[in-house]
Image (cartoon, rainbow over all chains, first blue to last red; front, side):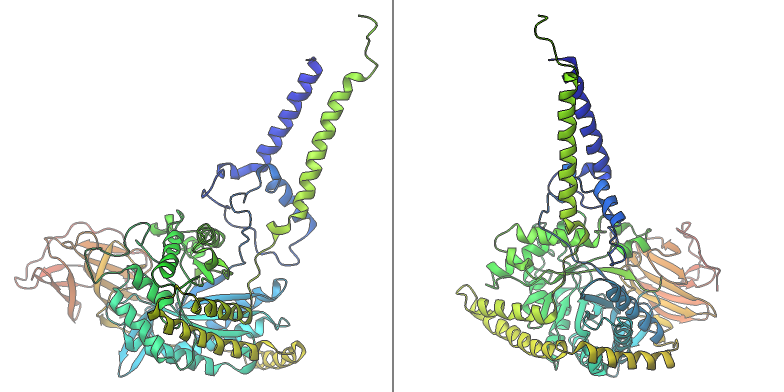
Length: 383
Length: 249
């Protein structure tokens, strides 16, 4: 072999190596299935003004050369744009209008019609006595009634409606939320009051706002927060007392459940089971799941896939309908001192891809991902 | 072998071929990438109307399945009925003429601009003893049973009592001045195996606390003195964890 040929081959290999290294950049650790996915922050949501040739060229030379194109492990998965869901600390009118306006402005500036969900978490349930119910807002510990919450939802909806401006086709589903984080007030009666409140909020919306806003109920139901008996009682309170079939989304976890254990204490007949999680997520008439996919190690996604499999195999309910996922990446960036965020801070894209991938890799649950097109990330409002 | 002499420039042919091949690879890569716009696009969520239509089909299909357990049939029929009702409603609100919708919205925007919403304090800042635990995101290593809330001119004082989550025998008193977020400002471990603590009453600067072990304490909200309520003796406590972040009320 001539010296020239050897030199040429060496030069070629060197150039190839340089390009590959340069292109792979920080993605070098992504090599196989279920490793760290896209880094964060993800590419910002592209508005029309942002998609320009310079950005495309930049994208080409930093990420997408085919030698190292990320996403080979998820070839067909494109995540939706995420909305921001809010932990609510104040329901002052202007605060809620501004919150809705932010979502509306985002939808107006994005190309095309947007369909999103936002989970407004008004905190823990509270029984004020004398038939008056409400919540205790996060951190400020402000006590608010269901009537005040209905008004707050109206303010958010009107802020969204106005700020979408000339975009009259984008639509947001407001999930009016509480949680099961209380020792005493997660009750049937509170669930019934929540059902009445959603109808009350809907009645406040004008017909034109309803063109772009619809309401559902939601509860952040975590297995660590409360026992299944009171949580189920709250769900039944909602399910049996709603005058209109507004859905109830379980923004919840299946912590400890198969394939990692048995949900609750297997020796305690009163503790959580897969059947309980199924019931509050899809078993009750108005229940639908909107799972929290927080954990970096795919555990949440796998646990929810097993709930879907349970629904199919034990209940004969095929294709449990997952519409979206909830993550808490942004909230974690707001609370760097929170140690639990260390392993529970999936980005919205990661959360979505994990659930999609896990559901679709099993033929029994693959259809459960057919309608999975919502992604929302939790954020502390007012910070 | 003088007869087999290389033509002038032949030594450049191979590098040129390799160079061209390399260029071709890059061009293919660029073309591929520009063609693959998925990196710059996102999944478009369907409308409620589309979702309801698909859900209705799916529920109908599931209802026809032999695998569906009899006890769940009524449940799915209920879900189907609800989905059909919601589909009707969504259809009503989805089929609106954009020009009409924009005209109505402009009026709404004009009205809102003319009288912008003012900030108004809504809700009640409850003070005193609260017989419930704080939100779970606060001090996750503890399990509090009750707490004290007191308002001052510019801030709030919170005193939580309970026990360590992983050691229920260890009584805990935690203090926050301002807003309880992730960690308390100050966290006291109460000596002895007191078990769970609970706030019973308040009088002046003192909070009265009962313990699962039967012990009774009083705790000063401002000096942090812990007194055995039965004997009146002060109980020395370990140096607490943390410091006050805001100035004391």
